[in-house]
Length: 378
Image (cartoon, helix red, strand yellow):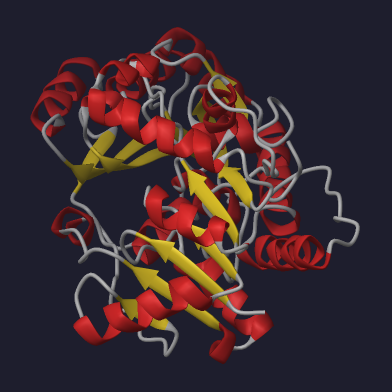
């Protein structure tokens, strides 16, 4: 079996899965192709694109790699693609080639399905609908909202399978007990309006009123940073918070292990939110908005994390207060979160499942069934 994995850029959310696929089927039978150069903005956020593997094709940067990519696209038994190259996918289907398409949700708020009013988007949707009529075309929605969006417009003759981003597991996860230490809360990312970091600052202000010895760390940069710094200065006590510049992913994970709770307050524009994978893998407790893809897909409320309504800072503050005052609850949520990543949402698990499902589809044998995690049939 020869597999081509296609995405736009080399990212820490894709490479761990690619490494596992190459390990299982052999490097000679696998290629990972990026179609675009790395984004400067992502580099500034600590993303490392300097990954040197023999199976990586930098098709958007190197002509020799582009030519090899074209050959693999034509010849590979399986293509796993996150790009909207639907004409090329149709060509594979016409030649009897199995093709998987993975995507975040198309109808992200606030525009939603009104995107169809744009002629270019409408044409692309028609191309996609033609693909879904083939039993060789399979859809991997990145999160439950992506699945719901697509089922509004399409009936898939092939399969629809649960999917998501898979991050590298933390080598030495640890549940950080309080033991008299400050209750530490953190967030990291791009400071954009839809990330709703203001919700966290407002919730933390109320936490301060109810609980002493609490601390907030906000990491990143963006157009909202000045406004967020002003809001924090107005609402939070001096010395109870800090703003840090963007740091590398290993450093973010190190900080997660030093904090007790990570909050993901984004609105529904957050298609997945791979930081939750990293947080749970590190052993840090998660509180997340229930309209983010990763939270809605991976988090079971009060089992392996807590969910709140986006923008509802009162609800978020209640949850922060609960965990600040009940460390045994917080630690149990962290333990279950780590178990969720280890046993279901790890790159190794996803790679093994992807290959087993692909082999079954190619050989027309019984397809394995899973009750949770990647490649659960939807």
